Length: 200
Image (cartoon, rainbow, N blue to C red):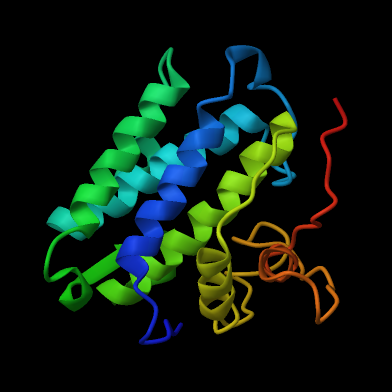
C-alpha cells in the first residue's frame, strides 16, 4: 500500500474525522437500526465499528497495544459521545511528531509504516462518514482536496481477498464514469454506489 508523498494525511485524517463527526451528531437512537451502505451492518453496528477502529488505531499508534482493543467499541447510551471520545483519542495519537516513523499494527492487515496506517484510517473515515450520512438521508459533501487525496491513496491499494469481496474490508468495485467527481469515484472504488439510499 502506498501513500503519495505530497499527501498530508495527518491533516486530512483530522478533517475526515470532523466531517464524519458532523453527520454522526445528527444520529438519534431511533436511527440505530437503519440500514447502511455496508450491507452487513445497521447504523448502530457501523458506529460501533467506527468507534472500535478509532480506539484500535489510537492504541496501536500510541503503545503498540494488541489490536484486540478494537473489540471494545462500546457505544454505551450516547453514540455521539463515544464517537467524539474515540476521535479525540486517535487524533491525539496521530499527532505525535514521529508518527510517520512508527510501525503501526492495523488489525488483520498487518503492520505498516505510520504514514500508510494514517492514510488507511483517513480513507476509511472519509467514506464511513458518507455511509452514516446516506443511512440517515442527510447531505455529505467533503471538500475537493480530501476526496482527491483519498482517491489517490485508495487507488494504490491492491485487490486481495483481505481487501475486496464477500466478508472483506471493501465490496466489489462499482464501475464509475471516468469524469465522475473524485468522491463518487472513491465510493465506487470501495464498492459503494453513490446513488444508494436507505429503504426505510
